[in-house]
Length: 391
Image 1 (cartoon, one colour):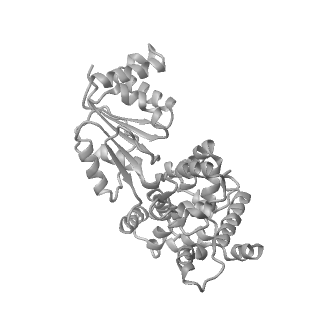
Image 2 (spheres, rainbow, N blue to C red):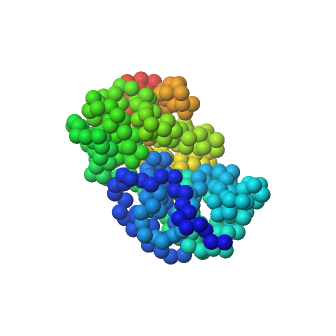
Image 3 (cartoon, rainbow, N blue to C red):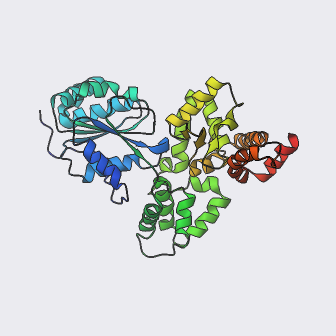
């Protein structure tokens, strides 16, 4: 049974798309040959544009694939539901004759016996959730996977990791959205993009807010972000940015998944939020837990790309916007209650104060001071002083 002409269930056709030229070219090359590809975010940040890239590539590139079928693959149940929907689209009469489990099996048999299709598995949380599908669907079509996980994808020939937009691309994205209804004052737009860490979802969220608030300039938004961070991180444009697509909600879902596996990981992320974003010495975390538990928590944060590590230097890095959110108290977020945030701030400064050499006038300790100086600058001064008195 051939698929009906034009069968396509892409959830959105991205009209506004900037950058990503190299990533699109890599997908062109990877999906031109047998096999699949993983579109995966650097640091696994939700909101970095994995789904947008996949949808844009599928909708606009001359890959010649048909049908195109998009499945939200964040759980086994979602995968099964997406396959059952495919079976119904291919043969509507089956939906009244078969239960969902049999519909999903029928769809996998169809994929295995036909070629030329493109299957997009979006937001995979666990590779095991899609292993049966990849095993049974065969290699006659193409599979494009998006995931926040940074762990190795065994058997996947190409992994395209996304980073944040560069400065010019982020500013272009904000400008085009904010001025869609006409010219306006965008003084401070570059500084606003930098404050957002050039994260695509954050830039889109803020730009849509500016578009709906003509009297709010980028500098005014920066002032509100500084004074009311919790409210602004979850504030989206009405009818444009659903509450579940704001950066606050996206990362809360990620932390829900992480803490279900290892609560210590969330404690570590809140603590790391109080240091400079780059080159954080991993030794600052040494006495937080026993080594196996500590490494398991760090590995989980790395797997979900909430942090990145540099084994050569023994340092960690956290996206600045992840840090900003993690250190912002919010009574509506169980991961960012005032008590937890205050506790993390105290622990971070105490550990930093403990790591400082006892003296500064000996050349042997100068490299340690140079390593810690950015984090001293980033730490709350009052906490650091209190930690020094306590020591």
